[in-house]
Image (cartoon, rainbow, N blue to C red; front, top):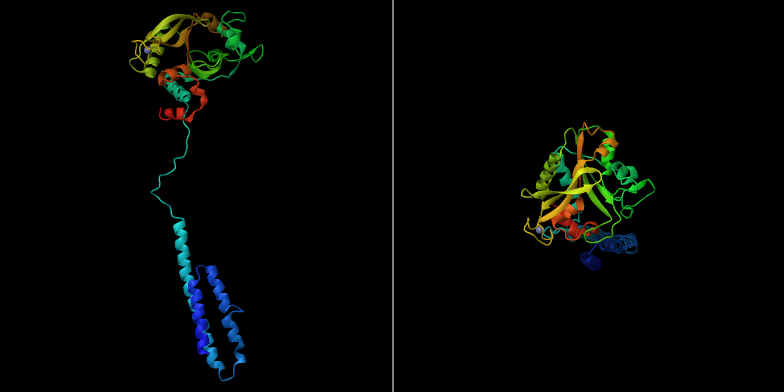
Amino acid sequence: MDEKAKKLIAEAKESIESAMSLQGLEEVRVKYLGKKGEITQALRSLSKYPQEERPAIGRYLNEARETVEGMIEKRRGEIAAIELEMRLKAEEVDVTLPGKRPSIGARHPISVVYEELELIFGHMGFQVYEGPDVELDYNNFEALNVPRNHPSRDIQDTFYISQDLVLRTHTTCVDIRIMKAQKPPIRAIIPGKVYRFDAVDPSHLPVFHQLDGLVVDEGITFGDVKGVLARFAREFFGPDTEVRFRPSYFPFTEPSAEMDVSCVLCHGSGCRLCKYTGWLEILGSGLLHPKVLKEVGFDPEDVSGLAFGMGVDRVSVLKYGIEDIRLLVENDMAFNLQFIHA
Ligand SMILES: [Zn+2]
């Protein structure tokens, strides 16, 4: 019996040591110590042995049971340690791996330029106003001295919603809303989208961006137009920027002038961008026409005003050297990201 018990223990020991998982170890435990396990069964069948042998056999078997229980407990600890180590290894974070940069958006160049323009004019005391994209024909044309049958009102350029509603063709229409809502002194800039029936090409889009300016006060003269706009040009394009005013025509201003700035590329010596003139046309400006002042209920004897308007897409293109205006609406991230720190 001694031999039999030793053999049982030796077998159990081998099974226990080769168990590689807690589940495998549990199977070994059931095999020897479970209800139907070999050691349990042997202890139960002690009665088969002669009376005088029973105590000795019983002692061996109990010793075997304790030994096997002890070995299983020890192995359980070892396996738990191995499993923990394997899990830690699997979950290990390699802190030397380069991180994945999350893809983030960028401000659109038009937004960047709008902010800069609002800052420049804000320093000169201008406040930002906005108006609706769908505008009354009255505000967009009639009140700005463009009556229904006026030749400058080219119906082909305008998106009509109805007889009396248009998609605004300029943000100048908001001038009327502002002047009807408040009394001078007024210093307003109006950023916003405008719409014209243009074919898309490298320098034209049917939806584009404008910034209009409006000043109404006592004694506003063309000197104010020059002062405000020359300061804007130097702050926006650089301190060495020169400006010139050329007579022009707009129905709502008198006198009217186009403002040019010295070419941002060649600084006046002549290049392809400025068509070898050394100058770039930037904006339209002038003193508010007395008819417009009267239309909103102001007396041209008491107050005068100035207005100007620029294409924000155009000044952005010039400032950043963008060759094709269509890039502004294609939402190409590689393009937009160039302005992330602008
Ligand atoms: Zn040039």
